[in-house]
Length: 85
Image (cartoon, rainbow, N blue to C red; front, side):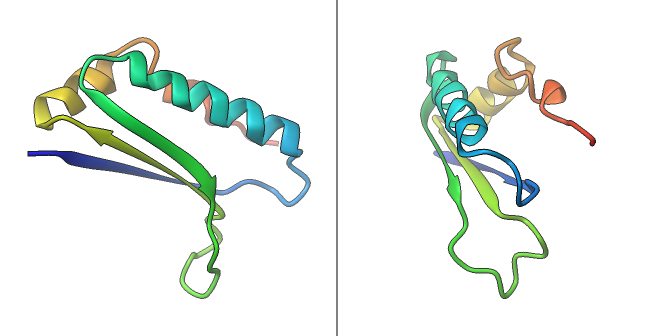
């Protein structure tokens, strides 16, 4: 069964488009991980219920085993994404 892995992001208003474009490109590179079928990243288009989240990543994976592979793959590197200013 296909699995959708959803990650919400809160970027500050002053985050440059260049940074977001670079992140988008990097995230799309995750499709080289076995079992990752597709990766989409973009700005949310509603704010009513977003609770401050303004971007979303949706990864489509082959199955639950692929999610486990994805989560432990060194290219995943999400721990490197956590940045505080």
